Length: 317
Image 1 (tube, helix red, strand yellow):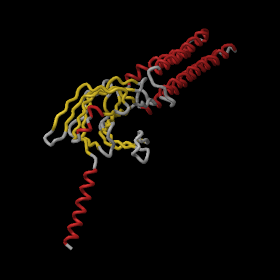
Image 2 (cartoon, rainbow, N blue to C red):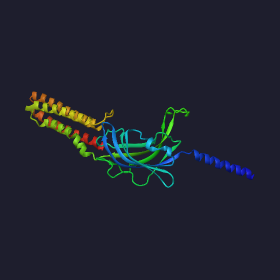
Image 3 (cartoon, rainbow, N blue to C red):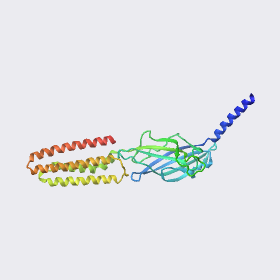
Image 4 (cartoon, rainbow, N blue to C red):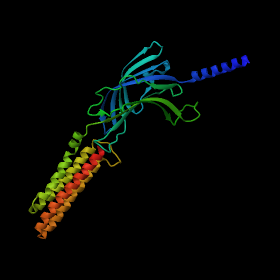
């Protein structure tokens, strides 16, 4: 009986040891973001500068060679140092500057909030050999991390995950065409004080509308001036939209920029239509009726235009 118990415990010990020996090595990773800059909407990219440190036992991991930054256009390892800790682990500290590709949400531009993503993998070792563990001690970003933007409160998130690739990358030893790699990453939500930028971008559009609106206060004897001013305003609004669109990436969705310019174009056209109706009244010698119509049309159109603009801007902010 004692021999059977001994063999049973020996079997349990051997099983647990075998499982432990097959467990993947862990890599403790920490990050400190110095800055996020050169946010380029047109090219859908930004530049991030950060310190990255890794602590691990397996020397074969060699992150100086096998560090992978998905979604990066370029990675510049401007500095790195390697040391050995008292417990035998390797400690690697490196400074990275990466130009990252990302997708922008511009539906509410310039009242937009953007989510920036940065992640790393080891290009040679999958999740069966390597698992990232996040180092959460201390702060993770500089107070002046962005220029013209600020980090949304409690939006800086450090995470680890397993990323699946539906391919074996040509490895004949894998039965299924699927690979899994451990991922360490950072998510940052940023936004800006948008009102000054909003005024800067749209002041030309609003001035164009106001110039067109002044047509209602031009005497009916100068009806040609009304049409000239309205048509000029129409082209000014279109020009303002092209200037803003040139700084933004192409989008299939209807953005705030499209909405506000569309509303303005419609109301400028409505003013032209009102001027045409006023002209028909003048030719019929109905001068008093023309004055009443111009006064009513002016304030009704202005009121509706202001309400629509305030509503769409309020919803986007």
